[in-house]
Image 1 (cartoon, rainbow, N blue to C red):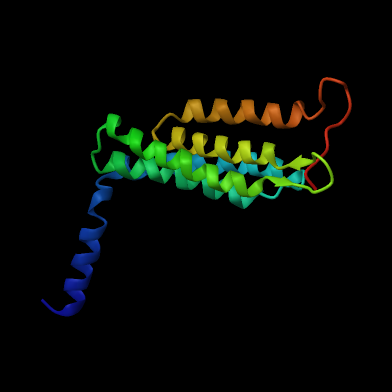
Image 2 (tube, rainbow, N blue to C red):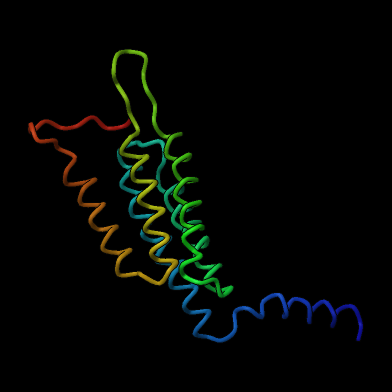
Length: 163
């Protein structure tokens, strides 16, 4: 066996975890749902000039989905994935904190909604990655309703945008 055959055999072994068409389809569907839903949330944030927009939300959702999908593929028990979820939740908190800015002119704090949307986007990605696509879709739609429809506060005046 020459080096080319050995190399090809090694590549095949590295991708052997994909298994069959059902496994590949499951991975593609879960990751695609995570990216699309993260993109929807990110697009809304992008349109108001938020510091974390389309790409950030897509990447957060994809990353969160991967963090739970990979242990599930490896055979980790559902109960043990709670530690992964704790890490994802805490880590996303740091990204969200970076979106919050306090201005020196008074009590003007901006970016809290974007930080919350990044955090929620991670949760949507986790739901998609765990195969709970319906929960992910419903949560993303509710979030879009909150972000878009409730942009006007209870006094009837337009809330400030994050630009």
